[in-house]
Image 1 (cartoon, rainbow, N blue to C red):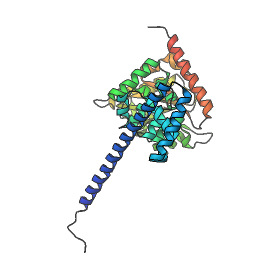
Image 2 (image 1 turned 45 degrees about the vertical axis):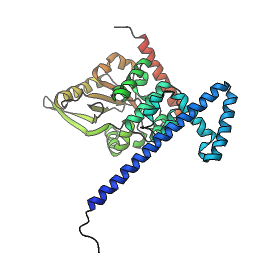
Image 3 (image 1 turned 90 degrees about the horizontal axis):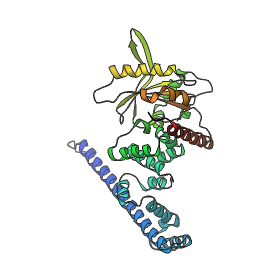
Image 4 (image 1 turned 90 degrees about the vertical axis):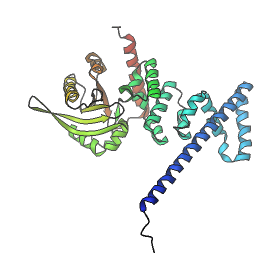
Length: 345
């Protein structure tokens, strides 16, 4: 006979304590293993430098691997030891390793250490920690060339370093680290011909994947948000709130090419949101114009950044990776050339 006095909440509380303890143990084990791998890599690196020959390094790793496998099992392959060596070479500073090992697992780290470009590597490291990506999501973001699609990649290297340092030390996210170009909307499953309302409806139907592409901190507020000015109704296509930026984000969807009149339309919406919807403690609203095409020259002449408006293209079908890579590299180079050639004010 069951005891009627048994409180089910007691079992729930005990289960929660057990699960929390398991998570703490897993985190502790991961942190210790990560530190072990770094120390092993550091020690191997010291031995290789002493030998001062590439062939000597290969020989050391092969011999050491055989010895460790005999003693500790298959987990100490030559490949694993090379990962350890790469880890120590990429992050020679113990303080960085000490912080990273508590926030990312070994699979995260193995992915990040093979990114050759230091700025790109720092970007993925900090955004991964901030948004708490799984190792699978991290790899997907790298494959989709997220860094190259983010607005910050088109800024001078010193600006990128400063923005990432602020993110690392103060956990402050700038709009340039949030907005991207292009956005991949291939998951919407749109046909060759579709309307703006079709685009909106598809986004709402796939809202979870839409937010995953845009960033975890976007929170959906409204579709076709009605605002009234001088007894005339206007409608904002999509309204989001970004938690880290503490801003309302108005998104306008355009099927064709960006036109200069889109600016005044979105400026009106942002001004209205700033006066009537912005709450105490929030930053001014920002606008995002998603277009099928855009002209960088028109955007530069209109000085949209001063209006808090970002313009980006969207792709409803994933292009070949090589084509995307070439396009993004050219876009980054063009943007940096324009900055370098811009006359000082």
